[in-house]
Length: 192
Figure 1 (tube, helix red, strand yellow):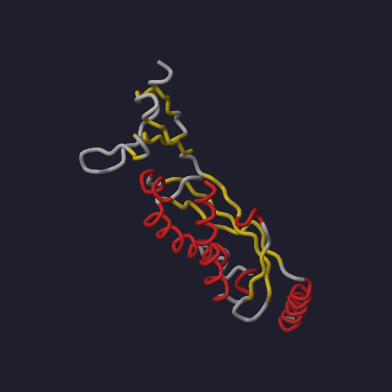
Figure 2: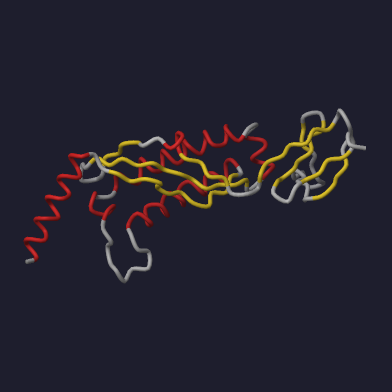
């Protein structure tokens, strides 16, 4: 009986492959199995599983990377992404392992980040634009831009649903920090 059955947990997707090809319904869509006990043919069917909860991935294992802003300041950032499988059939066609999916996400997010961040000035990244603004910091707008950029392509091309793209760490090289303090000091003197 154990060879003819498989159990799907509440936290995962399951797809049955017969001789290496996923089972499909009449419409040609890959069948995903709901939580519970299901039957399969022993030795012929294989069960593919993936966690359906949000996964957190830090780009290049949390490495800090240096980027130049629009006004030519250097900043260092560490970026993360929260994702899950949105379309198990498409995801399974594109990737054999989670590591492959994360490698693709790494590339997508890095490209988006390296396109969007250099469009903003250094001051945009560290200051509140307007205290009455419901979006708060400019960084939230940048993260939202990155989410829109990455999210649509990831779902359409890879079956990955992206829930959030964000910055785990934002820092500045010492030379930039000194310039920022000098500029803030000058601004305070002008206000007095």
